[in-house]
Image 1 (cartoon, one colour):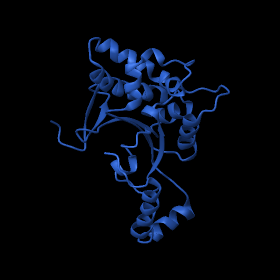
Image 2: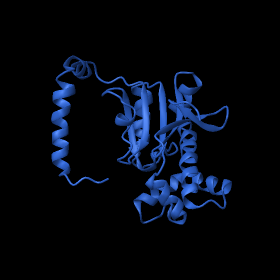
Image 3: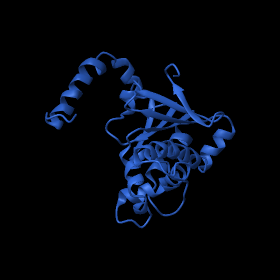
Image 4: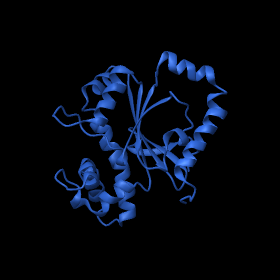
Length: 221
């Protein structure tokens, strides 16, 4: 539900609460972050969707997660061309400099980016006049896989499967990064695919042994 309160006032008031209720009460903790720098153990790649803020959903503190957010939580394949690679640069920094131990690709239900891809797959190509659809072209293989597996599925069901297949495609793309592949091979880095069902309030993680997304953090149905 959209609120009518002024958004800037809400942010400023929110900072005041943060300062009074968290910063002032944990001054030593925040000063340590300033003095010692960041050392997160997890790179968390999530969607830009305003409803799925990782720090809120997963109850983390400042310094716990190194977060990348973009439309539809997509990891592009490793490239060294002349393009500006914001997501790839952040991955490289997290792995080579911060030496994170885990990378989590966290998708979610009702993803607007994946829904747009499923409704207009022909628009998702590298030469699209839309920057959004150029980006979503990276998830086109996930759409093709979901459509092949569920050829008669309505768009709602198709989008749900595509959301999950896109997570798997991003995990595959992570392994095209030399620094990621090396650390995974050496046992110093683990990759995870998570799926947050917003409507049900449930979290699932991809299990390579079963080839399915299994419940996390709750009793299996």
